[in-house]
Image (cartoon, rainbow, N blue to C red):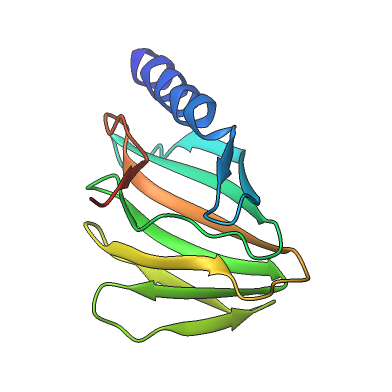
Length: 139
C-alpha cells in the first residue's frame, strides 16, 4: 500500500507542476494537462503517466529532456506537430501518427506546425516513480 501512496503523490506532483500554461516565443501558449496516472503493478517502482498537450497556433516548447528513466510514446490527436528527437531528422506528424522517445533523449523541436490551427498530442510516459521532474529545459 505504501508504494501506491508514494506513486500517487509523485504523479500528483508531476501533474501539478505541468498543469499551467507554458508560453511560446511568440506569446502563444501550450497547455499540458494530466489525463491518467497509475503505478504499474507488475513492475515495482514504475509508473504510467499520460498528459495531453494543447498547442495554440504557432506555439512551441523550449528544447527539453524528460525524466531520465522516461520512455515516451507520443500520439498526435489533432493538427500537426513538428518534432525532432536527438539526432533524428525534423518531421511533421499529423493526426493519427506517433513517435517514441527513449530515456535520456533530447527533444530539441516540439511545436505546432501551423500558425493558424491548434494542435493536440497525447504523451504517455513509463518512468520511475521517484523521478521528480518530468521536463527539464535544455540550456
